[in-house]
Length: 389
Ligand code: CAA
Image 1 (cartoon, rainbow, N blue to C red):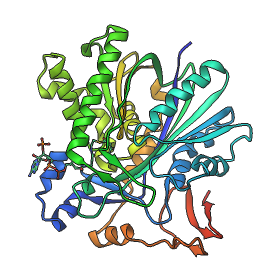
Image 2: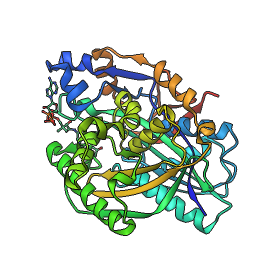
Image 3: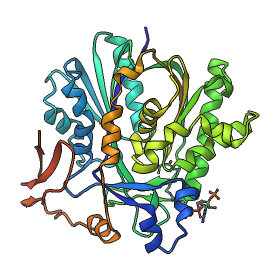
């Protein structure tokens, strides 16, 4: 029985900063961002948006299509959770009016947790073949103003329905995976911005890729040339390109850079204009690949490398299913990305520094433009959400 991703839908904020604006203020040559790190825009969430509203908005098209009725497991992956106790998934479950018979839990391991969610969901479906699981990976990537990571900020959420006989992508059973206790990127509970040892993090990302790939290759006997496309975790698009180049060189794939990058290019298009979505970013890459590739990808094998700082890495694969094109949300996603509002530098800094009171008292947000749901305020230490549909 094939098990895998049956539908995929994503959402990002309505607001963005073009990195040429940031480059000007930070006195940096713009091509350091556009070319050197490979990013053009970064999605900036408005004050009344958080990982819950991004997630509910991502999953909303699935609700509208009646796809959530058989879901009995909701796994919510995030690095930017909003409560130490209650799962962000429970808020989403409520906003989407999902069936009460449902297990809901939040998962954490930096940017890797979306993949943990996907693999756990597959195990659940293997045991309950008639049932479905909803995996949501939702994050806001936030670094200090003026820090090297600033230009790699972004936000977004991906909702994936996992089922037997999936209409988009069958996930293959073999995986290579590695855990190593390192401090390349972390965020203590008292901080709203991550600490990061930037250069070290890029080295660990590649080291873990090589180790995961070695395991996968040994288990399957496959070579890198057996893949038609690749999707990598995308903290910034240049990271994925460099890592792929290093992997190919190490395992002696004879190809020039341009040829290697054609196997990645479609998967990087959305991330280049949304920025990092941490746990969701590789899956934004998958949506980008399926929705923007000119070629029919039916039957093509895709290699995935998921990485979460701290760190856990996993290499696995999937095969695109015939007829997948009829089950995408490509038009909605194109619309979403084309109709955002550009922020000035000052607007960006004002939103970045927006001070929500932390004493849990009464607070009502002014209304910004969001998806179908918004974070409307706080009352008696409880977050309040509003449905706009
Ligand atoms: N034109 C073209 N290219 C230019 C340029 C110009 N005018 N000016 C500079 N560049 C190039 C540089 O040569 C460099 O290229 P190489 O990497 O090929 O040498 C590239 O632009 C970046 O320049 P720097 O190395 O000087 O950049 P930096 O040190 O200021 O920042 C970074 C890079 C450390 C990765 C920083 O973006 C960062 O800290 N990011 C956050 C951490 C991160 O994303 N790590 C990735 C792995 S960890 C992970 O994946 C988990 C996660 O999601 C966070």
